[in-house]
Image 1 (tube, one colour):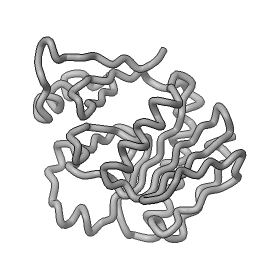
Image 2 (tube, one colour):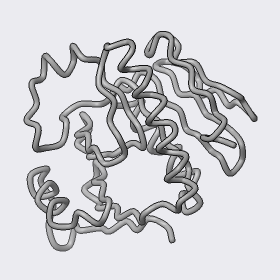
Image 3 (cartoon, helix red, strand yellow):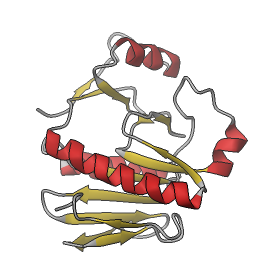
Length: 191
């Protein structure tokens, strides 16, 4: 089953508050809102993708607890990007000082782009759609992004102001200057 995109133009244009209420009323469904106002309904992932996502989020969180430099978010967290889209990366991280400066309400979407995002391709995901999403993240201020394509055993590394780097069958990834000291072992995530 693949994600379904609904064009609501004929009926309404959802505000961020209305999208929040819609999300609360449909907790069993993962939703995103594009910058153009289209509603994306995503099916649950299969067990293999769920396991891989749990592994990468756990590794990121263990590093973060040691570095104590920011906050890790799971795939249920919505971010309001500067372009107005509300997106939920599979895993993400935001520097602590950015959150402190924002003082966001705990019951709502974060109105910022994360510093770091990961998108993990599940069996139902389109590689093109995920690449478009990664480009959108970068265009909206994300500093580092990883598109993990387990199906093809590839990783695409997106860096601020850099060309996309495609790695074939890598064994690990480095957090570079964005996540100093973070190394993701891809065993259990990509393989």
